[in-house]
Amino acid sequence: MTAPIALRRARGRGALSWIAQHIVLVTLAVLFLGPVALVVLTSLMSNEQALTASIIPRTWEWSNYVTVFRDVPLARWFGNSAFYATLATLFMLVSSVPAAYVLARVKFRGANVIFVAIIVAMLLPPQVTAIPVYVMWSQLHLTGTLWPLILPNLLGDAFSIFLLRQFFLTIPREYADAARIDGCTEWGVLLRVIAPMARPGIAAAAIFMFFNSWNDYYGPLLYASENEVAWPVAYGLATFRGAHGTDWSITMAITVLVMIPVVVIFFFAQRVFVEGITLTGVKG
Image (cartoon, rainbow, N blue to C red; front, side):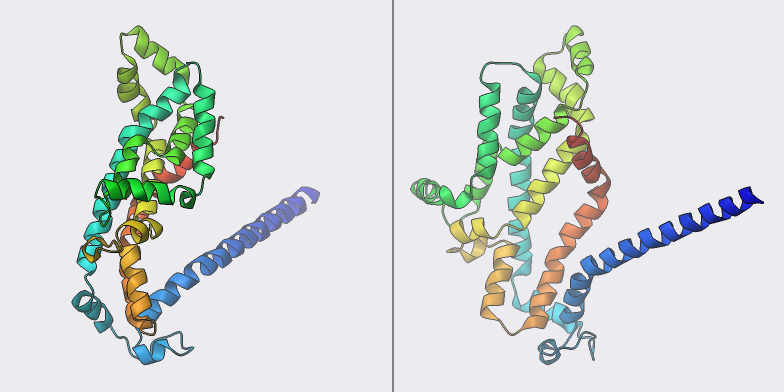
């Protein structure tokens, strides 16, 4: 009789553990999704109700989304953000992937110094170099556009290089050595062997760059604020909110529309994104 009793107790403890874990997960999900739900509900309220403490709309004002497209140049903001984020991501990949590969796999004098410099660049606040960099772009007559935020990615991104280097270190050297024996150059090893195996890490770096560019406010404020045609969604939304501080229903409707592309991209890329972040920390 002792064995069946012990088995039932073990099953009971397992069930209680399962319930406790899921209660915690459900609670965390509510905490994270609560503000998002509040934004969506507020976007469907009348402007008068949005100024009250109500949570559920009395009348569902779907016309708020029609008003957004009628009164706000949202399509232009989306186009500018897509242009900025896409080019910045592509330029980052073109420059940062080879740089990270060299730091991870090619031995040369000064590699550690360069890697330390990259870490320092990660820690350096952008405000420190804002004035001299702005003067440089001003002399090149590129202020008032998004190009000062896009072109620097051709020289590499410190965080992306660090992330990709750490991921490349998790790939066994034997694969690259076998490719070299078969006659591959270093470019061949990178493009034909390392890059396909490092797709999760590359995807994670690309998603980080795309999201940072899409949500960037400080850069457009500094370089594109004088030219309304070049405003991306982050700066356009902040400007609209400043000009219509009490029009919360329309502001929240714009916020929902701005969030949709980010949520959709992450939904489809979450598996490879999480895999890239997880494997990056396997080996230093």
